[in-house]
Image (cartoon, rainbow, N blue to C red; front, top):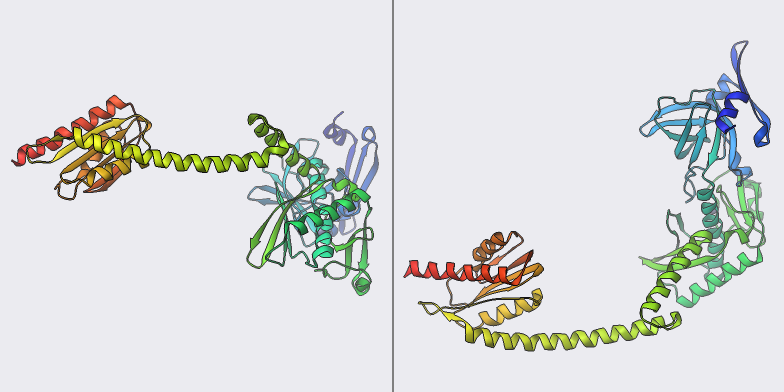
Length: 463
Ligand SMILES: [Zn+2]
Protein backbone atom coordinates (compact mmCIF):
# COMPACT_ATOMS: atom_id res chain seq x y z
CA UNK A 1 0.00 0.00 0.00
CA UNK A 2 1.57 3.29 -1.05
CA UNK A 3 1.46 6.46 0.98
CA UNK A 4 -1.42 7.90 -1.05
CA UNK A 5 -3.52 4.75 -0.49
CA UNK A 6 -2.70 4.83 3.19
CA UNK A 7 -3.97 8.35 3.43
CA UNK A 8 -7.18 7.33 1.63
CA UNK A 9 -7.82 4.32 3.84
CA UNK A 10 -6.50 5.37 7.18
CA UNK A 11 -7.32 9.04 7.25
CA UNK A 12 -10.60 10.17 8.67
CA UNK A 13 -11.39 13.77 8.41
CA UNK A 14 -14.19 14.88 10.64
CA UNK A 15 -15.80 18.24 10.74
CA UNK A 16 -17.79 19.02 13.84
CA UNK A 17 -19.94 22.05 14.44
CA UNK A 18 -18.95 23.23 17.86
CA UNK A 19 -20.95 26.19 19.02
CA UNK A 20 -20.03 29.28 17.03
CA UNK A 21 -16.70 27.94 15.77
CA UNK A 22 -16.04 25.02 13.55
CA UNK A 23 -13.49 22.44 14.64
CA UNK A 24 -11.46 20.31 12.25
CA UNK A 25 -10.17 17.02 13.57
CA UNK A 26 -7.58 15.19 11.49
CA UNK A 27 -6.65 11.60 12.26
CA UNK A 28 -3.82 10.09 10.31
CA UNK A 29 -2.84 6.49 10.97
CA UNK A 30 -0.14 4.89 8.85
CA UNK A 31 0.84 1.63 10.58
CA UNK A 32 2.89 0.22 7.72
CA UNK A 33 5.17 3.27 7.87
CA UNK A 34 5.39 3.03 11.63
CA UNK A 35 4.13 6.56 12.09
CA UNK A 36 2.21 7.23 15.26
CA UNK A 37 -1.40 8.37 14.92
CA UNK A 38 -1.51 12.11 14.82
CA UNK A 39 -4.26 14.58 15.27
CA UNK A 40 -4.55 18.27 14.76
CA UNK A 41 -7.42 20.18 16.23
CA UNK A 42 -7.75 23.69 14.91
CA UNK A 43 -10.57 26.12 15.31
CA UNK A 44 -11.64 27.97 12.19
CA UNK A 45 -10.08 31.14 13.58
CA UNK A 46 -6.83 29.27 14.25
CA UNK A 47 -6.78 27.88 10.75
CA UNK A 48 -6.71 31.41 9.37
CA UNK A 49 -4.23 32.83 11.88
CA UNK A 50 -1.97 29.98 12.89
CA UNK A 51 1.68 30.14 12.00
CA UNK A 52 3.16 26.98 10.55
CA UNK A 53 4.78 24.69 13.10
CA UNK A 54 8.40 24.45 11.94
CA UNK A 55 9.35 20.79 12.21
CA UNK A 56 12.71 21.50 10.53
CA UNK A 57 13.66 23.71 13.47
CA UNK A 58 13.52 20.85 15.98
CA UNK A 59 14.78 18.06 13.70
CA UNK A 60 16.69 18.94 10.53
CA UNK A 61 16.86 15.22 9.69
CA UNK A 62 13.06 14.79 9.45
CA UNK A 63 12.33 13.90 5.83
CA UNK A 64 8.57 13.16 5.94
CA UNK A 65 5.60 14.48 7.89
CA UNK A 66 1.81 14.64 7.92
CA UNK A 67 -0.06 17.93 7.97
CA UNK A 68 -3.39 19.65 7.28
CA UNK A 69 -3.92 22.22 4.54
CA UNK A 70 -5.02 25.40 6.29
CA UNK A 71 -4.97 27.81 3.35
CA UNK A 72 -4.54 27.73 -0.41
CA UNK A 73 -4.00 30.74 -2.67
CA UNK A 74 -3.74 30.91 -6.44
CA UNK A 75 -0.33 32.21 -7.57
CA UNK A 76 1.26 32.57 -11.00
CA UNK A 77 3.10 29.24 -10.73
CA UNK A 78 -0.03 27.38 -9.53
CA UNK A 79 -1.08 27.32 -5.87
CA UNK A 80 0.59 28.42 -2.65
CA UNK A 81 -0.44 25.99 0.05
CA UNK A 82 -0.14 26.76 3.75
CA UNK A 83 0.11 23.80 6.12
CA UNK A 84 -0.36 23.67 9.89
CA UNK A 85 3.08 22.04 10.20
CA UNK A 86 5.95 21.52 7.82
CA UNK A 87 9.56 20.44 7.59
CA UNK A 88 10.03 22.25 4.25
CA UNK A 89 12.70 24.94 4.66
CA UNK A 90 11.97 28.28 2.94
CA UNK A 91 14.71 30.34 1.25
CA UNK A 92 16.28 32.31 4.11
CA UNK A 93 19.64 33.32 5.58
CA UNK A 94 21.53 32.43 2.39
CA UNK A 95 20.18 28.84 2.39
CA UNK A 96 17.99 27.89 -0.59
CA UNK A 97 14.52 26.40 -0.09
CA UNK A 98 13.70 22.71 -0.04
CA UNK A 99 11.79 21.04 -2.80
CA UNK A 100 9.80 17.82 -2.58
CA UNK A 101 6.29 16.47 -2.76
CA UNK A 102 2.94 16.90 -1.04
CA UNK A 103 1.00 13.63 -1.37
CA UNK A 104 -2.78 13.45 -1.12
CA UNK A 105 -5.14 10.52 -1.69
CA UNK A 106 -5.59 11.77 -5.26
CA UNK A 107 -2.14 12.66 -6.51
CA UNK A 108 1.37 13.90 -5.84
CA UNK A 109 1.96 17.64 -5.91
CA UNK A 110 5.54 18.69 -6.65
CA UNK A 111 6.69 21.50 -4.38
CA UNK A 112 8.41 24.04 -6.65
CA UNK A 113 9.20 26.68 -4.05
CA UNK A 114 8.82 27.33 -0.32
CA UNK A 115 8.26 30.81 1.05
CA UNK A 116 8.02 32.05 4.65
CA UNK A 117 5.72 34.98 5.38
CA UNK A 118 4.89 36.21 8.88
CA UNK A 119 5.71 32.83 10.38
CA UNK A 120 3.63 30.87 7.84
CA UNK A 121 5.27 28.45 5.41
CA UNK A 122 3.76 28.52 1.90
CA UNK A 123 4.43 25.57 -0.40
CA UNK A 124 4.16 26.55 -4.06
CA UNK A 125 2.82 23.65 -6.15
CA UNK A 126 2.01 23.55 -9.86
CA UNK A 127 -1.56 24.24 -10.98
CA UNK A 128 -3.67 21.10 -11.25
CA UNK A 129 -7.24 20.00 -11.86
CA UNK A 130 -7.28 18.69 -8.28
CA UNK A 131 -5.96 21.49 -6.09
CA UNK A 132 -5.38 20.88 -2.39
CA UNK A 133 -8.60 21.83 -0.59
CA UNK A 134 -8.48 23.49 2.82
CA UNK A 135 -8.82 20.87 5.53
CA UNK A 136 -7.36 18.03 3.49
CA UNK A 137 -4.52 15.91 4.79
CA UNK A 138 -1.20 15.70 3.06
CA UNK A 139 1.92 13.63 3.51
CA UNK A 140 4.98 15.78 2.82
CA UNK A 141 8.36 14.46 1.65
CA UNK A 142 11.34 16.70 1.13
CA UNK A 143 14.06 16.05 -1.45
CA UNK A 144 16.55 14.74 1.11
CA UNK A 145 19.57 14.79 -1.19
CA UNK A 146 19.05 18.51 -1.82
CA UNK A 147 18.38 19.26 1.87
CA UNK A 148 21.42 17.36 3.15
CA UNK A 149 23.59 19.11 0.56
CA UNK A 150 22.33 22.47 1.84
CA UNK A 151 23.01 21.38 5.43
CA UNK A 152 26.59 20.43 4.55
CA UNK A 153 27.16 23.76 2.81
CA UNK A 154 25.49 25.83 5.55
CA UNK A 155 27.22 24.16 8.52
CA UNK A 156 30.47 24.26 6.53
CA UNK A 157 30.02 27.99 5.98
CA UNK A 158 29.60 28.60 9.74
CA UNK A 159 32.78 26.64 10.40
CA UNK A 160 34.72 28.37 7.63
CA UNK A 161 33.58 31.85 8.71
CA UNK A 162 34.84 31.13 12.22
CA UNK A 163 38.13 29.78 10.84
CA UNK A 164 38.59 33.02 8.85
CA UNK A 165 37.66 35.12 11.90
CA UNK A 166 40.21 33.31 14.09
CA UNK A 167 43.01 33.26 11.53
CA UNK A 168 42.55 36.73 9.92
CA UNK A 169 40.23 38.71 12.25
CA UNK A 170 37.88 39.31 9.31
CA UNK A 171 34.19 38.67 9.93
CA UNK A 172 32.04 37.30 7.14
CA UNK A 173 29.86 40.08 5.73
CA UNK A 174 27.78 38.09 3.20
CA UNK A 175 27.14 34.45 2.33
CA UNK A 176 25.51 32.68 -0.59
CA UNK A 177 24.75 29.00 -1.06
CA UNK A 178 24.28 28.63 -4.80
CA UNK A 179 23.10 25.68 -6.83
CA UNK A 180 26.68 24.87 -7.82
CA UNK A 181 29.03 26.81 -5.55
CA UNK A 182 29.01 28.69 -2.24
CA UNK A 183 30.62 32.01 -1.44
CA UNK A 184 31.41 34.18 1.56
CA UNK A 185 32.60 37.77 1.47
CA UNK A 186 35.32 39.19 3.71
CA UNK A 187 36.07 42.90 4.30
CA UNK A 188 39.56 42.86 2.79
CA UNK A 189 40.71 43.43 -0.81
CA UNK A 190 43.46 40.79 -0.65
CA UNK A 191 44.12 37.39 0.90
CA UNK A 192 47.36 35.45 0.46
CA UNK A 193 47.40 31.84 -0.73
CA UNK A 194 49.27 30.87 2.46
CA UNK A 195 46.46 32.34 4.60
CA UNK A 196 43.79 30.62 2.52
CA UNK A 197 45.60 27.28 2.89
CA UNK A 198 45.93 27.79 6.65
CA UNK A 199 42.20 28.61 7.01
CA UNK A 200 41.31 25.55 4.91
CA UNK A 201 43.50 23.39 7.16
CA UNK A 202 41.95 24.90 10.33
CA UNK A 203 38.40 24.28 9.09
CA UNK A 204 39.11 20.69 8.04
CA UNK A 205 40.81 20.00 11.38
CA UNK A 206 37.52 20.89 13.13
CA UNK A 207 35.73 18.54 10.70
CA UNK A 208 38.12 15.75 11.70
CA UNK A 209 37.43 16.42 15.38
CA UNK A 210 33.77 15.63 14.65
CA UNK A 211 32.50 18.23 17.10
CA UNK A 212 28.75 18.17 17.84
CA UNK A 213 26.51 20.98 16.56
CA UNK A 214 24.04 22.13 19.19
CA UNK A 215 20.94 24.18 18.53
CA UNK A 216 19.19 26.07 21.33
CA UNK A 217 17.37 29.30 22.02
CA UNK A 218 18.55 32.15 24.19
CA UNK A 219 16.53 35.14 25.31
CA UNK A 220 17.69 38.44 23.81
CA UNK A 221 18.42 39.78 27.34
CA UNK A 222 20.88 36.90 27.90
CA UNK A 223 22.53 37.01 24.49
CA UNK A 224 25.69 38.79 25.72
CA UNK A 225 26.62 35.52 27.45
CA UNK A 226 26.93 33.81 24.06
CA UNK A 227 30.20 34.58 22.18
CA UNK A 228 28.41 35.17 18.86
CA UNK A 229 30.59 35.60 15.76
CA UNK A 230 28.31 38.42 14.60
CA UNK A 231 25.41 40.33 16.15
CA UNK A 232 21.93 38.77 15.71
CA UNK A 233 19.46 40.39 13.31
CA UNK A 234 16.40 39.19 15.25
CA UNK A 235 14.87 39.99 18.63
CA UNK A 236 13.17 38.05 21.40
CA UNK A 237 14.11 34.38 21.57
CA UNK A 238 17.24 33.92 19.49
CA UNK A 239 18.13 30.55 17.92
CA UNK A 240 21.80 29.70 18.36
CA UNK A 241 23.69 27.17 16.25
CA UNK A 242 26.84 26.17 18.14
CA UNK A 243 29.74 24.15 16.82
CA UNK A 244 30.78 22.90 20.23
CA UNK A 245 33.35 25.22 21.77
CA UNK A 246 34.23 26.76 18.38
CA UNK A 247 31.50 28.84 16.75
CA UNK A 248 28.26 30.44 17.90
CA UNK A 249 25.90 31.88 15.28
CA UNK A 250 22.36 33.26 15.43
CA UNK A 251 20.79 31.23 12.64
CA UNK A 252 17.45 29.77 11.58
CA UNK A 253 18.90 27.31 9.06
CA UNK A 254 19.12 23.53 8.98
CA UNK A 255 22.38 21.95 10.09
CA UNK A 256 24.21 18.65 10.36
CA UNK A 257 24.57 16.94 13.76
CA UNK A 258 28.36 17.01 13.93
CA UNK A 259 31.22 18.55 11.96
CA UNK A 260 32.18 15.14 10.56
CA UNK A 261 28.94 15.18 8.54
CA UNK A 262 30.10 18.35 6.74
CA UNK A 263 32.83 16.35 5.03
CA UNK A 264 35.67 17.95 3.12
CA UNK A 265 35.78 21.76 3.04
CA UNK A 266 37.57 23.05 -0.06
CA UNK A 267 38.32 26.65 -1.01
CA UNK A 268 38.23 26.99 -4.80
CA UNK A 269 39.23 30.56 -5.56
CA UNK A 270 39.05 34.19 -4.44
CA UNK A 271 37.85 37.22 -6.32
CA UNK A 272 38.60 40.84 -5.48
CA UNK A 273 35.39 42.86 -5.40
CA UNK A 274 36.29 46.46 -4.62
CA UNK A 275 37.42 46.51 -1.00
CA UNK A 276 36.15 43.00 -0.29
CA UNK A 277 37.23 39.48 -1.19
CA UNK A 278 34.76 36.82 -2.30
CA UNK A 279 35.83 33.30 -1.35
CA UNK A 280 34.25 30.45 -3.32
CA UNK A 281 34.11 27.11 -1.51
CA UNK A 282 32.48 23.68 -1.55
CA UNK A 283 31.65 21.26 1.24
CA UNK A 284 30.89 17.55 1.55
CA UNK A 285 29.40 15.85 -1.50
CA UNK A 286 29.97 18.89 -3.69
CA UNK A 287 33.68 18.98 -2.78
CA UNK A 288 33.98 15.24 -3.49
CA UNK A 289 32.29 15.56 -6.90
CA UNK A 290 34.49 18.52 -7.76
CA UNK A 291 37.64 16.62 -6.70
CA UNK A 292 36.52 13.61 -8.77
CA UNK A 293 36.01 15.77 -11.88
CA UNK A 294 39.28 17.68 -11.42
CA UNK A 295 41.23 14.46 -10.78
CA UNK A 296 39.71 12.79 -13.83
CA UNK A 297 40.50 15.77 -16.08
CA UNK A 298 44.04 16.08 -14.76
CA UNK A 299 44.68 12.34 -15.16
CA UNK A 300 43.33 12.32 -18.72
CA UNK A 301 45.46 15.33 -19.70
CA UNK A 302 48.55 13.78 -18.09
CA UNK A 303 47.90 10.46 -19.89
CA UNK A 304 47.51 12.26 -23.22
CA UNK A 305 50.93 13.84 -22.63
CA UNK A 306 52.44 10.50 -21.50
CA UNK A 307 53.48 11.93 -18.15
CA UNK A 308 52.50 11.40 -14.53
CA UNK A 309 49.89 13.69 -12.92
CA UNK A 310 52.43 15.33 -10.52
CA UNK A 311 54.46 16.48 -13.52
CA UNK A 312 51.47 18.17 -15.13
CA UNK A 313 52.04 21.78 -14.09
CA UNK A 314 55.73 21.70 -15.14
CA UNK A 315 54.81 20.05 -18.46
CA UNK A 316 52.12 22.67 -19.17
CA UNK A 317 54.53 25.51 -18.36
CA UNK A 318 57.05 23.93 -20.75
CA UNK A 319 54.36 23.55 -23.43
CA UNK A 320 53.35 27.20 -23.00
CA UNK A 321 56.98 28.30 -23.51
CA UNK A 322 57.33 26.05 -26.55
CA UNK A 323 54.07 27.35 -28.01
CA UNK A 324 55.31 30.94 -27.65
CA UNK A 325 58.59 30.05 -29.41
CA UNK A 326 56.76 28.20 -32.20
CA UNK A 327 54.30 31.07 -32.65
CA UNK A 328 57.21 33.48 -32.97
CA UNK A 329 58.95 31.24 -35.56
CA UNK A 330 55.69 30.81 -37.45
CA UNK A 331 55.13 34.56 -37.60
CA UNK A 332 58.66 35.03 -39.00
CA UNK A 333 58.16 32.24 -41.56
CA UNK A 334 54.78 33.67 -42.59
CA UNK A 335 56.32 37.08 -43.09
CA UNK A 336 59.02 35.55 -45.31
CA UNK A 337 56.35 33.70 -47.25
CA UNK A 338 54.37 36.92 -47.70
CA UNK A 339 57.52 38.63 -49.05
CA UNK A 340 58.18 35.78 -51.44
CA UNK A 341 54.59 35.55 -52.67
CA UNK A 342 54.36 39.31 -53.08
CA UNK A 343 57.40 39.24 -55.36
CA UNK A 344 56.00 36.29 -57.30
CA UNK A 345 52.61 37.92 -57.72
CA UNK A 346 54.13 41.18 -58.88
CA UNK A 347 56.03 39.26 -61.52
CA UNK A 348 53.01 37.26 -62.67
CA UNK A 349 50.45 40.09 -62.48
CA UNK A 350 48.99 40.87 -65.91
CA UNK A 351 48.78 44.40 -67.20
CA UNK A 352 45.57 46.06 -68.40
CA UNK A 353 45.41 48.54 -71.36
CA UNK A 354 45.42 51.52 -68.96
CA UNK A 355 48.56 50.31 -67.15
CA UNK A 356 46.90 48.81 -64.07
CA UNK A 357 48.16 45.35 -63.05
CA UNK A 358 45.96 42.61 -61.57
CA UNK A 359 47.22 39.87 -59.24
CA UNK A 360 44.39 37.34 -58.76
CA UNK A 361 45.20 34.14 -56.89
CA UNK A 362 43.52 31.64 -54.53
CA UNK A 363 45.44 29.50 -51.98
CA UNK A 364 44.49 26.56 -49.85
CA UNK A 365 46.17 27.34 -46.57
CA UNK A 366 46.39 31.06 -45.86
CA UNK A 367 44.75 32.40 -42.75
CA UNK A 368 42.95 35.75 -42.77
CA UNK A 369 45.95 37.60 -41.33
CA UNK A 370 48.34 36.31 -44.03
CA UNK A 371 45.83 37.14 -46.72
CA UNK A 372 45.42 40.67 -45.39
CA UNK A 373 49.17 41.23 -45.05
CA UNK A 374 49.86 40.00 -48.60
CA UNK A 375 47.06 42.14 -50.06
CA UNK A 376 48.37 45.24 -48.29
CA UNK A 377 51.95 44.59 -49.38
CA UNK A 378 50.83 44.21 -53.00
CA UNK A 379 48.73 47.36 -52.84
CA UNK A 380 51.85 49.23 -51.78
CA UNK A 381 53.05 48.92 -55.38
CA UNK A 382 51.70 51.60 -57.80
CA UNK A 383 49.00 50.43 -60.22
CA UNK A 384 48.37 47.07 -58.48
CA UNK A 385 44.96 45.50 -57.83
CA UNK A 386 45.18 42.46 -55.53
CA UNK A 387 42.34 39.92 -55.64
CA UNK A 388 43.29 37.20 -53.14
CA UNK A 389 41.45 34.24 -51.62
CA UNK A 390 42.00 31.31 -49.29
CA UNK A 391 39.88 28.17 -49.73
CA UNK A 392 38.33 25.98 -47.02
CA UNK A 393 35.19 25.54 -44.93
CA UNK A 394 35.52 29.20 -43.94
CA UNK A 395 36.98 30.60 -47.16
CA UNK A 396 38.22 34.20 -47.14
CA UNK A 397 38.53 36.88 -49.81
CA UNK A 398 40.69 39.97 -49.55
CA UNK A 399 40.76 42.74 -52.22
CA UNK A 400 43.08 45.76 -52.19
CA UNK A 401 44.32 48.32 -54.67
CA UNK A 402 47.14 50.85 -54.93
CA UNK A 403 46.52 54.52 -54.06
CA UNK A 404 46.75 55.56 -57.73
CA UNK A 405 44.08 53.09 -58.95
CA UNK A 406 40.64 54.74 -59.26
CA UNK A 407 38.63 51.64 -58.46
CA UNK A 408 36.25 50.78 -55.58
CA UNK A 409 37.08 47.19 -54.57
CA UNK A 410 34.29 46.93 -51.93
CA UNK A 411 31.39 46.30 -54.39
CA UNK A 412 33.61 43.91 -56.35
CA UNK A 413 34.18 41.85 -53.17
CA UNK A 414 30.49 41.91 -52.23
CA UNK A 415 29.56 40.64 -55.72
CA UNK A 416 32.16 37.88 -55.51
CA UNK A 417 30.91 36.82 -52.07
CA UNK A 418 27.31 36.80 -53.27
CA UNK A 419 28.27 34.60 -56.21
CA UNK A 420 29.87 32.18 -53.70
CA UNK A 421 26.77 32.22 -51.46
CA UNK A 422 28.12 34.44 -48.69
CA UNK A 423 27.16 37.85 -47.41
CA UNK A 424 29.62 38.65 -44.60
CA UNK A 425 32.12 41.14 -45.91
CA UNK A 426 32.83 44.70 -46.93
CA UNK A 427 35.29 47.51 -46.57
CA UNK A 428 36.48 50.75 -48.14
CA UNK A 429 37.23 51.64 -51.81
CA UNK A 430 40.92 50.63 -51.39
CA UNK A 431 40.57 47.58 -49.10
CA UNK A 432 37.79 45.02 -48.51
CA UNK A 433 37.61 41.56 -46.96
CA UNK A 434 35.03 38.91 -46.12
CA UNK A 435 34.10 35.25 -46.29
CA UNK A 436 33.09 32.49 -43.94
CA UNK A 437 31.60 30.40 -46.74
CA UNK A 438 32.74 26.95 -47.78
CA UNK A 439 34.58 26.98 -51.13
CA UNK A 440 37.42 25.00 -52.70
CA UNK A 441 40.43 26.58 -54.35
CA UNK A 442 39.21 26.09 -57.96
CA UNK A 443 35.88 27.75 -57.20
CA UNK A 444 37.60 30.68 -55.52
CA UNK A 445 40.05 31.12 -58.39
CA UNK A 446 37.12 31.13 -60.82
CA UNK A 447 35.39 33.87 -58.77
CA UNK A 448 38.60 35.94 -58.66
CA UNK A 449 39.11 35.55 -62.45
CA UNK A 450 35.53 36.70 -62.94
CA UNK A 451 36.26 39.83 -60.88
CA UNK A 452 39.38 40.49 -62.96
CA UNK A 453 37.26 40.29 -66.15
CA UNK A 454 34.77 42.72 -64.66
CA UNK A 455 37.56 45.22 -64.02
CA UNK A 456 38.87 44.71 -67.55
CA UNK A 457 35.35 45.31 -68.95
CA UNK A 458 35.02 48.51 -66.93
CA UNK A 459 38.30 49.79 -68.33
CA UNK A 460 37.37 48.87 -71.93
CA UNK A 461 34.08 50.75 -71.54
CA UNK A 462 35.89 53.78 -70.14
CA UNK A 463 38.47 53.79 -72.94
ZN1 LIG B 1 23.54 30.19 9.31
